[in-house]
Image 1 (cartoon, rainbow, N blue to C red):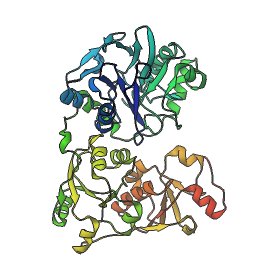
Image 2 (image 1 turned 180 degrees about the vertical axis):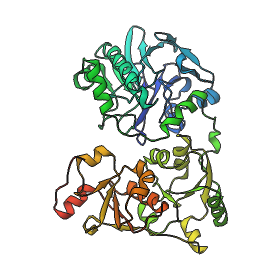
Image 3 (image 1 turned 90 degrees about the vertical axis):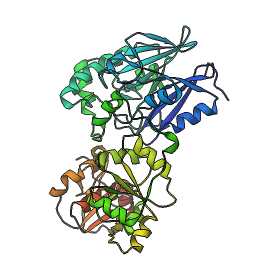
Image 4 (image 1 turned 120 degrees about the vertical axis):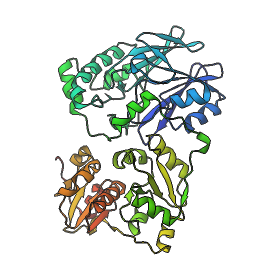
Length: 458
């Protein structure tokens, strides 16, 4: 069913990156898309299902956590790109200044300068005549918080936090009934708090968002900066790529990988390629190529790929035949990992059949840890909320850097379920560590299995 003017909005959620983009039915068989990712499959499916042609695309800011699909839509669909003039994008677009309005063919979009998350950030107020429908807030006001302000460097984090304070006050002056449509949501490392809600209203945020309850700028800055955790290093590269415009892809040819024989995988590895094993943890643990990096294919694959894999090394994939190669490729492409050399033809079975060396990693249950050293690779906030007594914590994103300082002792690596632990074990193995085991499960499983309480705090 085609949306009516009373319901023109279709949110499209990327659960892995924790973001939303929005398809807006303009009422004339055309559409606006706000903050589309480079992976446009869901956007195109939503538009096609409603019989809509994408005519406009708007970016709220120069995204750091994903490559924008704006340049792709401009090339393939001749969509007009709308963005802040302050972003100095190097591809065709209409640069908007604060307060400038765009006629979408009945609906109107007004740009509101809301710096803070980035310098050039804008929000977009959507209206139908005199009726305000809602505001696309990008990384300014988000459900229960505001997005991080340290992506342009820690030396500018306070300055941008003060700008964020002003931007939130500006948005809070909109009518309470105004719908709030953020880009960043739960699961985003751009600092969204946990929770199922991805949209809100101005009134609800004024009543529940702790940052909007702070009327002192200094306290706001202290609170916002104090809430910032770590973020993937690829965040520091993508904004500039988005400013220049990501390479336009031949979407019809994406989603496939070249099949590489064992001999070619060996040659590429010797030349500096990274073998990336995306199989489930039990399969990786049973047998894997030495020095392979384990990142199981799941919703969060792109985040950990961008956090753990070098941005310039060719990637050779090892997967199971039943794993979705198209999904794997698009998760890599949406964060700028275009250097996919191919996949091991025949998978791990072909490697073993060719009598090539393989390693295994022990899997243990919570009751099998015994007196072994425990390394917890969850984020600091997760660790502080409950961990096995005596466990040492190193966030997964820091394991490679810390490998030389981690004692070469019999170690059980753990996270919340096992996927991040397997990644950490593979990084330690690459650094020369042995006697590693991966815990199947997390701290709550350990507590239930042993009857012991978890520790809290650092």
